[in-house]
Length: 94
Image (cartoon, rainbow, N blue to C red; front, top):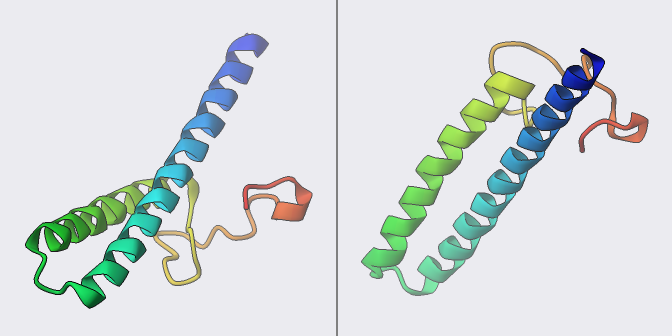
């Protein structure tokens, strides 16, 4: 039984890290496209891609916050959970 609990915790941590990685990638792509659109405002393909990534980010961020708590002070979601987990210097996720 203990082995199953460890597997579940490892899978949960892995899923959390994967979600954070996807969020970071989407944020980078959105910022990069925004910079491109500053100089190419009529590029419809880039604008559509920017909008698509923004929507994906919103969905993934909402999903992450429902599962693991807020990602930033601006998005506290349903519950104030800042103090429920270890701080980064205590081994928590930064």
